[in-house]
Amino acid sequence: MVILIGNQKGGAGKSTLTLLFANYLTQVKKRKVTVLDMDYQQSISSKAEKAKILENEPLYDVVPAELKIFPSLHSSLTNRAGEIIIIDLPGKMDDDGLLPVFAAADVVICPFAYDEFSVDSTILFAMVLRKINERAPFIFIPNRIKNTVKYETRSEIEKVIQRFGVIAPALADRVDFQRISTFQTPLILMPVVLPVLDHIYNQYIDWEEKT
Image (cartoon, rainbow, N blue to C red; front, side, top):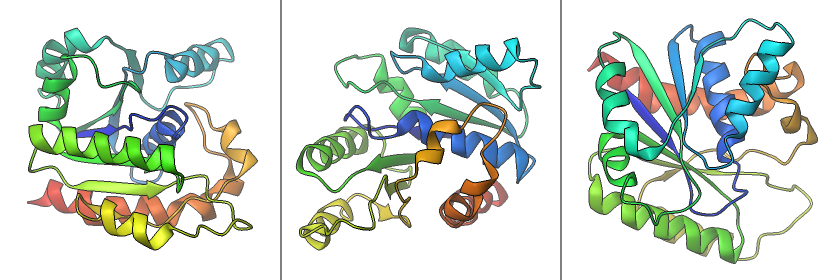
């Protein structure tokens, strides 16, 4: 299974969500996971290298990879039974190397915020990907939501986004998200993230694996 985590908008929380999901699948669901770090900043790869220096046992492989080698990587990884491949996508959509990645997706997860720039980027990302891949379920996650802020246009934004997929429970803005690594999710975050990750796993991953 190939899970894409992406949004054209930089700072949407793609890399943090990739770590959250990879940690959840390996630690909570005991699944085999490989993370392909295709983001230009390669922040996940950097965290994985730091974890090795600290001699922490890795939960999963993190592979820094350019888009152009994806077809070969995908062919190799699909031979590993039961493997879940999570891809942290680049924050730009001007590379033809994205086409085979989009086409390979079994599930697409898109973090976004309720602001004009984030929503515009989110919708563009969804429109382009949907033209290439019509079968993969699209899950949008409201991210870094501040409880003290009123989002006046929230209902209108959700109506547009729901044309492309479903909106999962929101993730609140917490400073503890900065402490996520490739070997652990801080325990204090588990009550915050488990409802979201359980929902996605039960509805879109465990179900598809069984069919």
